[in-house]
Length: 294
Image 1: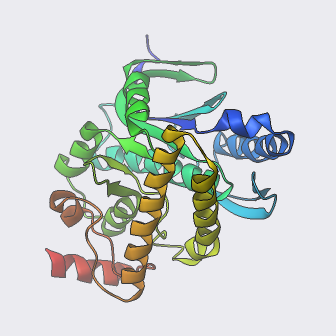
Image 2: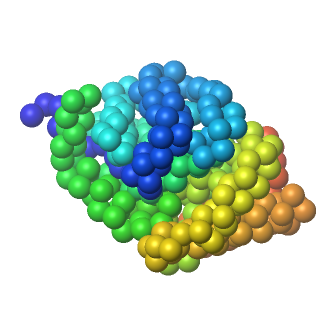
């Protein structure tokens, strides 16, 4: 079948949707927040900025979205699940394959980050595999791999397959310093060894403004939920979130103090995809740091 081919596939599942929908107020806010986000993601523009109401508090929140811009990319929403895929064919150059991976990870990064600021947590998986992906049909081993990773994720994180990490590490590395920096700010290795999309730290272009503006609200809601819930499974997920937020805050403080921090992943990964010391980077700064760390 001609429409079947290799694609970078992200499968994302919205956590706690049943509890959000059980309350008339949060149910309406959920629908009013999710609908425009999903509508925006399926469009082909490079960026979106939306003002939406927080699902829990009702306060207005500014969110940014970056849908996949590669030719042939597709986004499908099925109930509480979202599937994003980007073509990854054998005829693509090594640099273009890296770009396709970047497009998918960037879409996951902003989608997960935006939903978090609206009070909605997500977990998922990103893999490379065969797939047929049209608006009305998603089928193939790529989806199975991404879904399996989503099941393994357990916590509000989107795991990245080891095959995809191998491509980033072992593929021909183009001399694109800012590309490496953007990947570094989107990929992190968890305490259990899994790589996942790091959706909280400052974006290297936007800086720390976005994080400082909303991080306190996120922390407050997570701690409040942790005190109120009786579910062992929910507590486990929220405790992971508390740890993730704490480690991110440590990294942010070190970055603002101009201390070199390269502990977002194992040495093999962080040496290739290094995070710059400052949040906003120029080519000269990135090149200089790369030379010093090599």
